[in-house]
Image 1: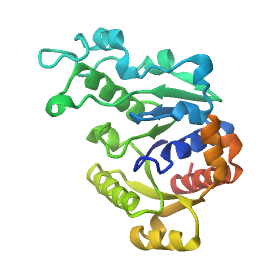
Image 2: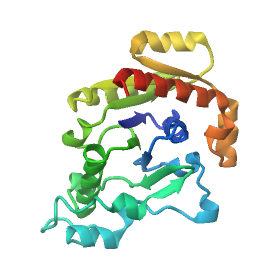
Image 3: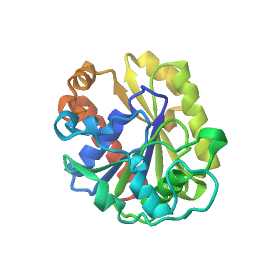
Image 4: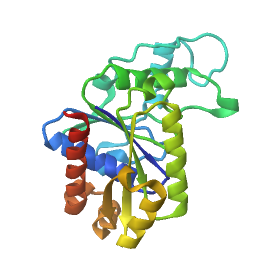
Length: 259
């Protein structure tokens, strides 16, 4: 199953991505987690020790690889380069195993100068298409708000879009915009995950705006999540209540898709 997770910055989508990936792995599933957020820290949320093992270089920053696969130097605009480069070996070559989960950090699309289509974009788009269409494990994509990473062909292969929302009008409006984009890209199932809830009143007000049936899970505000973030620990070990929410959400996904 291919799952994309999006939402306004700071709502907790990376935390949810890490919880789902770790729990799926714990249940014996093969899981590939993709950090496609330019400000992402999915590695740390999964339990990766950057101070010990070093920074994971994003795929889009591997200049020699970009030139090898596309036939053009990174950053070049205009001219000729391969639009559909070979990408089917990249997971095996460049993914990092973190607590039973395979992790890839892609980096962000290069959209400078009016949205140029450059060699880096060609490599990244081909890689994401490969993940969404050709691979058969669970793929969980931690995204920035919006769908710049996904073309129509790859987005149609996303089985579920989970939109994380926190109490606040800006988060709700961002969720609505993301949902509208998902409809344009023909993503069939969209579910809201309401995070950092302090009261039933907050949950009710969000449900009134987004629809009760569209809310697939609610996660109460958890001080332990803050402590895990401050200490650089994975919320999977530190936040048992949030982990239970992930277990319930996975069960719902199994029910929705009869897996």
